[in-house]
Length: 628
Image (tube, rainbow, N blue to C red; front, side, top):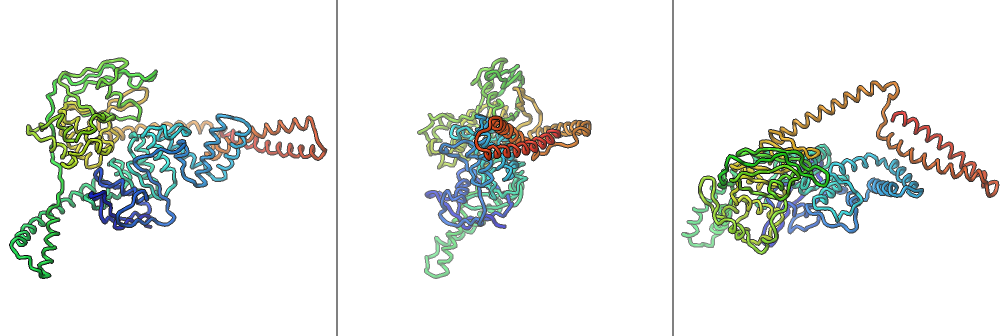
């Protein structure tokens, strides 16, 4: 069943062509990744599909009755909106019921009185009627996984990373037929990404996403679409299959261009020596010549291999960390960490967001002072530090080529040769035209890449990189990986990109709880496999203990409370509390009767009905309590 169909879509920005006459379709249940260089139209294509931008040509057809949810790269401010309102921003009866329940529960916890108790009872009854407890449980799990805690806080006060996580939670909870996600893993730590992988790979939702995370792409998608040179190429398979087939395509195109050049030289000679006769045959040959000329002038960029800059000589003493402590308020961020770096060592750092990974780098760079312990760098060490803050605004008003030349006119390569600053920029994707734009005209991803190049230009022998892969396209990541593989110095890198880490580092610093840092020798995949085995063993052990406990308690507690029964048990507690208060009020009325005989009789009937309901609810509550 076809959900989405794109026909002959074209888009220009001024004279710049993003894509021309592209067509594709997405079937129900397909999970498709869209990849391309930064600035070539990935996000624009998604915006056009969602109707946020208009194409210059083409048509978009969405199957009737299909609901689409979109996660853009940038999340704008919301007017007077809480996190809960953003997350549950779908006006379906189920979502409306859950939203009302959460707000009523919050009001009851803040102000427990008769009014909020009555509202709470109504909300619980409505949750039962809508069978909404499973959906509420799904909400709780997603909020927990993304570390979203205060759902009643103002969305506009959150940081960019927190907003991205809230927007992602809203998209996943939209109950949509099609999800369109633009860089969903940005601002997520590895643990969150792995949970999201499992969630998306097991759901039947149709998916179209832009991502530079190759591990994430490989786990979820079976189709890859690539925008290249304004054209769209589709591959059925995983990332490695895509690389293989892309190489075949480029080689075939190169052969076609070489053949076109040969034909072009012959036809050019004919054009120059032959009078421009007005015969139909001559005109056809001239038209054909223009096509051949266009084909022959095509360029296919291939990156140089073994591209490496000259590093400063490194001595025997590299970097020593002795009994390092760092506390924030009363909590240990880093506790009693020691390590001595060796020549050529490549180390990765992994851990949850906020666990202290960037703090360790800042301590090494002397941007922070330790609570205890020492960090001693060797005299020959030249650090190249790539932080998350990026370049300062002092570069505004300067062209890229001029900023680079302030650092170095010529760059010495590892083989002893020199290349110009312009050639260095061009290798990393800043073509000769882009080199003359002003720094402030760059996109966020281009600024991050340019900042990294300035770090590499310093010829460091110890590179410290904090999340260097954020906002980079896959082609830039491949170039950076090849460059770092040829880097002869020490490398210390924080990254949530597992493909990047597997390729570059040989051991890990794993940030655990209470400031402890574990040193693990091996790749991230080896660490993850070992971690999964340990967790599986712990689960089996817990299950064994639980089974033994259940056997011991079989005679006294043969049954276990189900999820639905637990919700019923909690609702009964609330209802019994309300009935007890009403019973007390009716008892007082009967103790001091007022009004006519019929009024008193009516009170007696209410009292009898209430007592019957109270006995019934109490009996059920006791039965469930036995299971508890």
